[in-house]
Length: 225
Image (cartoon, rainbow, N blue to C red; front, side, top):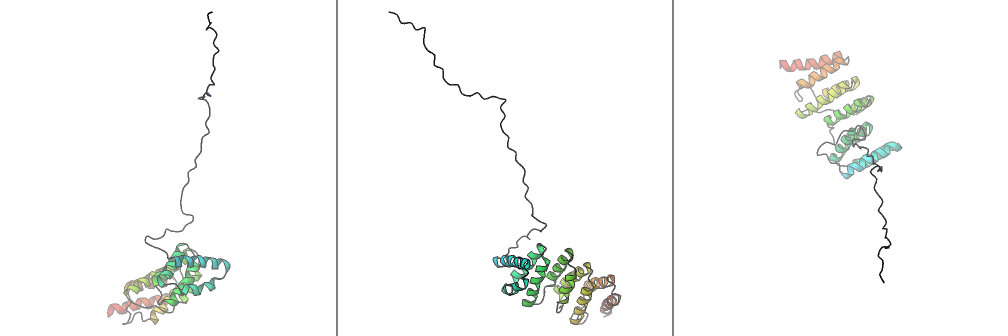
């Protein structure tokens, strides 16, 4: 008996799903992110490193200022080294916290006299830039004196320019009075030509013609001698 092979059931295997070219693949959208400063603060100067004590002092000053207990932060400030106090003042100026900078400057002046006139000029410029010009008169009014010397004369010229730029007549007159009390224009403290020129022009611009003439006469006496 012959066996017919004509009938063999076909095995149908499942076909894989076809990938249609027209199928839409969801696209991911990426938004560009730009990193930049959060405010108008300037960058830290190269090489400037704040100690942990200085950072903690800045943070505590800001908290005290918000809560109205700023005067209570003076004792901890007195425990800081001079370098830390200087760093705190400059960092507060960089962040435009001028009131806090003046607060620390008063501690620096009392703990480590005499006052750095260059730093004082930076504070005056910051106060003028932030519209706190009346604070300039208070700052200069609390100064007890000005000493002479070559390096100090350069710092003094910077302070005078800052005060004149802020147009603070009272502060300009106060600085001139402290200079005369310190012996400026005498043998002990020879009147620097550039300082006299900046002071004379500034006093004249602020309406102090008589004082400006006194400064100019001091230069004339120096030239004759």
